[in-house]
Length: 416
Ligand SMILES: [Zn+2]
Image 1 (cartoon, protein in one colour):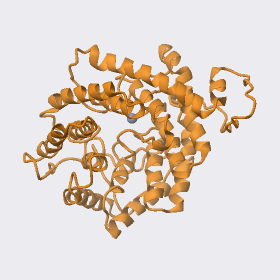
Image 2 (cartoon, protein in one colour):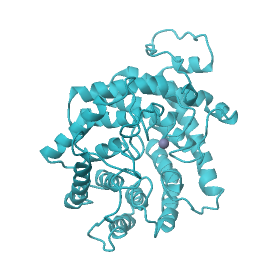
Image 3 (cartoon, rainbow, N blue to C red):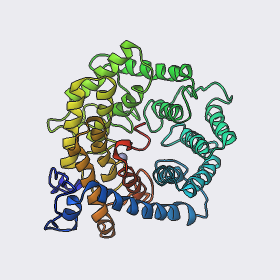
Image 4 (cartoon, rainbow, N blue to C red):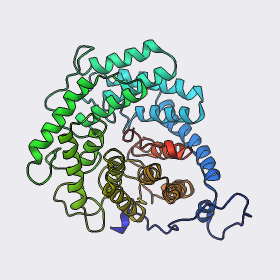
């Protein structure tokens, strides 16, 4: 399945030249030259490129559409543009980005009313949670309170008690895990207990109960979405375990998370990639949504939260798969090069090992050097929603901004 990705011909590692050493221009093409530049010079180039890309995304998804929102979601819609602007504001402190972001969230707020979806990435919780955080940064307490009470009210009809429908799934994009992620985002950025631990506990209990019911036997926790037992970040175990590790877990629940991750590691493919669903023998997808990249981010978190050495080793192994097979012929964060670069940023954040930072730089440089040409030639797929955060160049811009301060980088809407 070599046609899914570009063979990775970049060097496995190029150490940084000490600043006092004479700079000799390396032989080779423009990508090779970029890879030899010190990290700081590269990140400055990436920042400039990101700010240009951000303007393009803004024009195409907001200005050119008459500031009207049809798709409000973070995944493919206007909230993704708002999230990118908020990242731009965090990096540059440009107040204009914050104002524009706030306007877009307001339009998403109207457009999302009555939508049945309730998660951060694909639903109303994302609109209200980002709205509250942006309002806080703008110093508008009244608006912040409005979004927080909307967050609670829309899902229950009353502004105090959250009650999710009984028939929703448990996965990240449309289910309980995706709603809980939004709660954690609020609590991290607004303040502890913005969403009370008792409310979150009730939802977490549901997730654990459902997982135990289906996981009987081989794996402690298991879930189904549209008839399949997915393993990946978007719809399956990796995404749900990632969110559970942010909850207050009882010792037996912690053991079930640990056991579930161990089950996945034990049953991964021989080459190190992870099946997209239980029992699948098709070793094709090396995406955040399905396969090693999403699992790697969850394993990095497990190494940090649970502290077990074997999770760190498994995360490093998954990173190796991403390095070899993750230079995808797609651009976005969900199933593209931009998302896969975050695996190395995450490993770098955990270990401090500069070899991982180099690998993130290499994936970002590949995009910076070649994406526009490869897209215009139709070789690199720009996504069905080409300016969106999760499928399109919005994700590439987000990655480039995250490269400015790599120790603070977080996969959007997945790493807190
Ligand atoms: Zn995807």
